[in-house]
Image (cartoon, rainbow, N blue to C red; front, top):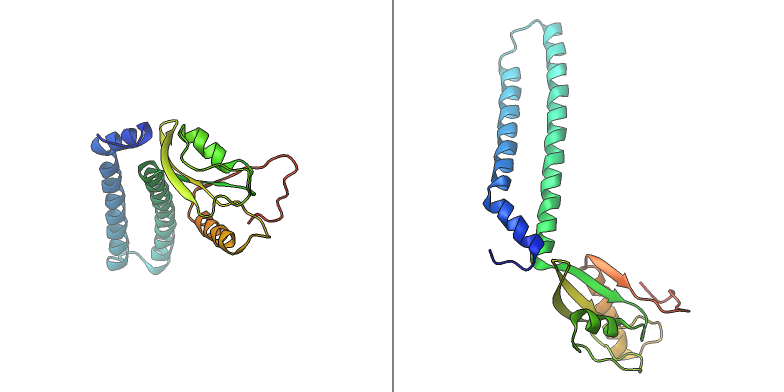
Length: 187
């Protein structure tokens, strides 16, 4: 199985072993069974009105419990899908901080290559830069971003705006601070 990391490979193996399809089949069977029981309780009311009300009341409480369990199962399935998406596409991580906080240096160190330029001048990174890597068997899409500050000039301000837009799409924000850093300008 080709995969972008060990965790994704393990997930793909589980899918191949049909664990996921068996879980879907069980959920489908539970829904079909609940529907049949509900239709039967409505179409064949052979008890007296008081007895019927009590039986239906118990039956509906039972349905409620089973539906709650099914809802929990489906929520867990959705969460597993989201984890799978992150394992396939990579966890999106943005390195955020003020200008010259060391964001580009950190990215280069994690990539083990000089991918982004580093300069003592503030505002060198005008646009975010993304690169893929694997950390601990997990694929990561790492973004170096423009330094956030209030007094940026036009082009740098556009880069900061693009960074703010990026922040709404990432899974993790790695806030890089240095001693004496002020958080006022950060989003």
